[in-house]
Each structure stands twice: as structure tokens, then as C-alpha cells.
Length: 227
Image (cartoon, rainbow, N blue to C red; front, side):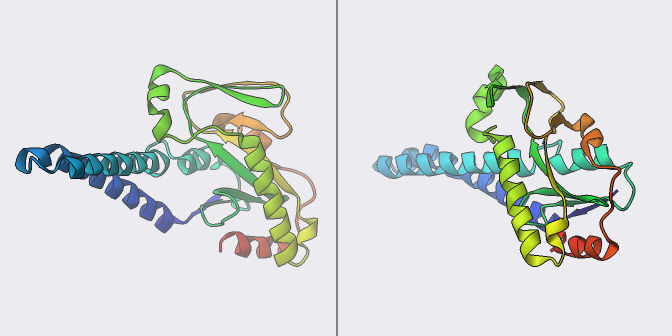
């Protein structure tokens, strides 16, 4: 399996996260020290406190998304590394989804959830049971939302794009899988409309037999997904 990643995008967002976190902490420090040196600057100090807190929280949120390990792309690469080189995994190269897998049989959208905790899917609804640490971090971490709905949305968007932009694109099978990549997540699932798996079970959901795409169509998809 070949992994293609927009490393520049990851690096830029990681730098932003670090810069925002540091800037927010410095502004918070300034809001604390200012009244000691300028006693009449209480209003300015209060404004700086709010700005610093907001900036730091934004930085921490982005750090949790773009800096904290394990990174989703690293987990996906590790779990799919044994696939042949006709499988290509694209990270952050396309606007439709963060992770797209080109196989000899079609394209699979990988909707990732990189959160710790217990997640239950029952009666077509998600519920998250949080430990104290996760609850404390909740405001500065990504939220579960509805990853199945997000996967369906990306799947349909990609299907429309491929049909419109690639000759023969209407024949390309487009699948979707929700992948929980955090090693300390627990899933309790009733029947789901698309596969929902922990990362270690991802490989078994990937198409590995069937009718192969024509080579010319495969090459067009490869060029399109790597844009």
C-alpha cells in the first residue's frame, strides 16, 4: 500500500496550533501582570484575559486535531500497510474527505474519529459516555457528532465529483467506512448502514476481490485524488 499525504497542510496547521497556544498563554500572562504595573488598566486586562483564553483554547483545539498522537493517518497507514501497491491511501490531498483509499475496485471514503471513550450506536443514534478526563477536555477536543452522516455526505459528494470530472466516473464504486482510530475507544454497535470499525478491524472491510477497474480509469482516479 502506498501512502500519499499533503505534509505541508499538516505542518501548517500544526504550526498554527502551536503559535495560537503560545500566543494565548502570553496574552493571559500579560493580562495577569498588567494591573501590577498599570493599576488603572483593569478594563484592558479583562479584555486581554478573554482574548488570551479564547486564543489558547483555539490553539489547544487545533493541537488536539493536528499535533496530538496517535495521528489518524499514521494509524491507517499501519493497519493497511500489508496491502499491495495498487492500493493508495490519500491523506488531506482532497477537499471531499481527509482520507481516501483508492483500490483496484473503486474508492473508499475513510471517515475517522480519533477520540477516547465509549461510543454507542443504537436506534440510529450515537451516544458518547465520557470519563472525567474526556469531559474536562471536551471543549477543546473534536466532538463525535454523527460520523455515519459525515461519511455518507463525503461519499455522495465524491460520487458527484467523480462522475462530473472523470470520464467513466459513473461506473466507479464509491464506498464509505467509519474508522475509530484511538487505541482507547470502545464501540457498542447495533446494525449500521455502513461499516463502523476500530482501526485494527479496518482491513477486513476493504475490497480485495471483485471486478477490477479498467487501468485507464484507475490512472485517472489516481491523478484526481492526488490533486
